[in-house]
Structures are given as structure tokens and as C-alpha cells.
Image (cartoon, rainbow over all chains, first blue to last red; front, side, top):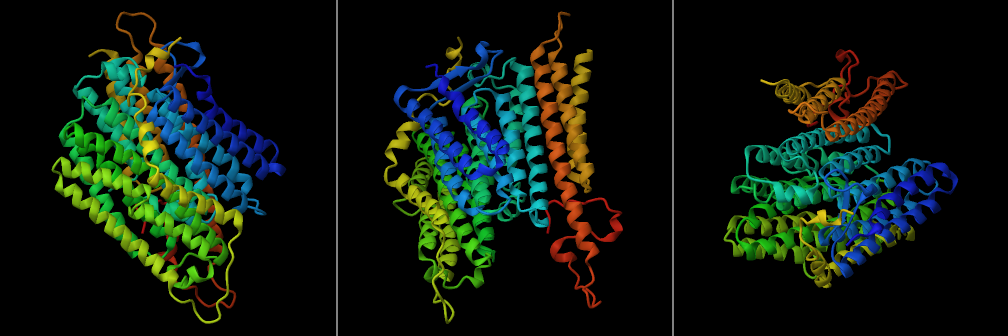
Length: 487
Length: 131
């Protein structure tokens, strides 16, 4: 059904960005207001989708295939809700984190641009619109990552920018090939017209390659750990939690929805193998790091790999396919919330002790128990322990792997979980040793600790109450017949 | 071989050349120019696609896509150049403070910080992957 509220999640953060630039003195308050408004509009769209099935609107009254549509089905609504929650939590955290520093002048406008493009990605129904939002996402993410201005941060994010540009120009070439072949870029119309052909296969390869580069699939993950680890804490939370998830969301839309007739077991198998290598490689590298932020950044590399296991598993028959699809989507959602919570907790700790070298953090749990508890609860979900959301997602993926006979992927899922336990328990063990003599309590400011804890608890609650989000995912077909929303 | 086909093929060739240059060449400006050439290649393909064989006016939709793409490429190049100039500032500052006040020689920092050695005539080199 046609709904005008679809433009709100994109327009409100843009207005917020304008306001904070126009009135820099009131930036934290305006930032908080705009963040509340944006997450409210995102949750409103989610609620509407839940109650009324999928929504759509064609902008400007131009009918398809000329016009550009926005649409929200269950998948979009779930991601929109997740990004609203994580965005709100990170915004509240950022008010405390940047308080009294002039860097907030740069953070808030860039963050709202990022949020607008994120919501644009989740609501886009047109491949070129996706490209524009994806580019905006990459530009604002790279600019945000370089916020501290240190040489390491600028170099890492310049590399991230170049890699992102390579990814999106490859994606655009795929889009050009699709337009050449089928004359339209609207996802709904394309899904009706697409046929297996060399052109479609070529476009699929290009688009998947470009997006896999942005989602940090092995071996194209090299840009991620330095970029995420050198950014300020709220930015790391956004980059790992939301930006990487957005690239994966587009992959879901395109590879498992739009290109479903064109997929062959060869491509799906390749993506699965690369995903499996990501899981294991990221986990092994995380074990070797001596900076806490690098541990969490490599953990992102590892967790992203799980999502790519979706592709070979959905090709294997319908029962396994539905578990695989739900599992991978839930994994992306759970990872976003848990990773954001983890980075926020690490950032709050770093804010107080001034560094993130693991070996010098002995006894941190004795000195700041609350924030370490937030980190531990986020770790629950990252490891995949019940009753967290990560467990529910891994359970579904594992069930799908076993049902379809892919024992190798099953072992990779379990092995990845063990590696996650290893590198996260290593961190927790160091912090729980008795601190050196003469220790004192180190209180963390409430404005930093509470958002981290709330997000960590959400990651666990999403597991306990996983029925509702899973039902939301079923609303509307994955690739909807959005043509019917044309006026 | 129609003109549109040749034009599109030229676009794909430009994309491939730009991709090769982006991956192989180290100086950052080279990489940025390579990215812009890749972009031009994709735009060539769009223009070729817009051609209508029955002689009527070309399809305006790919033209709109090219215009948007040009805007995006220009903004991305601007951001990359801004980050690059920040990097060069940081390097210039670091190399001007290389000796400690007592005149004792600075321990070699090249391995850890990845500062370019003075023989690279100032062009900023971005290794990928680094370290």
C-alpha cells in the first residue's frame, strides 16, 4: 500500500544535518532531537509494515519504469528498525563522548548524512538509487573514520575510501549492463524480466564483486581492521555495525532475490567458501591482536563471513533454504546490535583509561564492572551463546547446513563459534584478573555506559523474543511487486 | 560494427585499464586518476546504451544516470584529495621534527609509521594492503 511516511527516514536526518551545521552552538541538543526524530520515523515505518504488509511509494508522481520508488517490506523494515535502535543508542553515546571537544562539529553532520544514506539503502527499490545511497554511505563513512585526524586514521580511511570507490564503480558497471539488457532498473520490474544469460551473469558477477569488497569478504577484507580500529568509538560502532551490514543487505536483495534465476551452484559455492575462510581467518587474526579495538574489528571480518554462507545453503532445497535465509538475516541484525554495543563499551573504557592495549588492562573488570558487563553481554551474542540473538541466528544456519548435508559449512559455523569464544574470553580473562596493587574504582560516565549496556541487553533480548522479528521478516515477498505502487 | 557498439566497447576497455592502474600503481594521485578513468568507462557504456537504433532521440534515462555518476565521482575525488592533503601535512610535520632537541639521532620509525622515505620525491604512496 502507498505510504508517504517512507520519505521521513531519509529526509529527517538530512534536515538534522542542515540544522546542526546552521546552529553549531546547540549541536548536541539538536543532534539528540534529530536522532530521536529519525529513529522514531524508522520505527514508525517498521510498525506500519508490521501492521499493514509492504509499503511503497513512487516519488514525484512519475510512474515506473521512469520514476524512482521507495519500498518497505519485512526485510527492509527489520533492518530499518535495527538501524534506528543502533543509531539512537550511538547518538546518545556520542553526546557524552564528544562533550567539550570541538570534534563534535564534524561528527554530527557527517553522522546524519550517513544515517540518511543508510535509511535510503534500506528503503530503495531502484538499483541506481541504491548506487547513489551506497556512494553517499561510503563517502560519509570514510570521512567519519578519519575524524581523529591522526596520520594512521587518515591513511586507513583513505584506503577505505579507495576500496569503497572501486566497489561502487564495479557495481555501477553491473547496473549499466542490466539497463542495457532489460531497459529498467526498478527491482520489482527487473525481477520479472530477468533471464539466465551471459549479460545477466556478467552483471551479477560485477555487482557481487563490488558489494563483497564493501562488505569485507575475504580476501578483500584488508581495509577493515585499520579503518575501524583507528576511528573514534562511536564511529567504529557505526562502521562495523551499520555500514558493513548495509552492504550485506544489498547483497541479500540482489543475489538472493533479484538474481535468483541466474545463480548457479558455482557462484554460490565460491561465495560460501570465501565466507567460510573469512570466518576462520578473522577469528584467528583476532586471537593474535594486542589492541582491544583490533580484536573487535577482526571479529567483524569473521562475523561477516557467516552471512555469506547463506548463498550455497539457499540453493539446496526449500526447507534448508528458509532456515538459511532467516538465519543469515537474523545474523546480520544480531551482529549489528552486538558489535555496536561492543565498540561502544570498548570506547567508553578507552575514554577513561586512555589506551586500548590489552596487556595493560588487567583488572579492568574490577575497576569498571558495569562497562565490562556490557561488553560481556555483547560478547554473548557475538559468540553465539544462548539465549542471545547470535545463538538463534547460528542455530538456524547450523540447522540449514545439517539439513542440506553441507557438513563442511556446519563445521565452519561451529569452529567460528569456538574461535569467537577464544578471542573474547581471552579479553575477558585479562580484564578479570586481579588488578595491580593500589587499584581504585574507575567510574565510567553514565552517558557512555548506559547506551552500551542498553544495546548489549537488546542483543540478548532479540534472542529471547526472537519470534516477533522473525515474523516481521516474513511480511511481503523478498522482491516485491512494487510496480503496483505506481500512481 | 555500429558506432554505439564501438563506443560501449571503448567504455569497457577504459574500465579495464583504469582497474589495472588502480591496483598496480602506488602513488595516490595515480589511483585517483585511475578511478576517474574507470568512471568514464562506465559513463561511456551508459551513453552507448542510450543510443536508439531507429534514429529517434536517444533515451534520456542513461544520460541522467551519467550526470549523477559524474557528480558522485567528483565529490569522491574531492574527499580523497582532501584526505591526501591532510596526510601530506602530517608527513611534512613529522619529517621536519625528525631530530630530537639534543641532536641525538631519531630511531628509525619507517617500519612502524610507514612514512615515505625521502627518495619518493614527495608523491604520496599508498600501499595496499599496508604493513
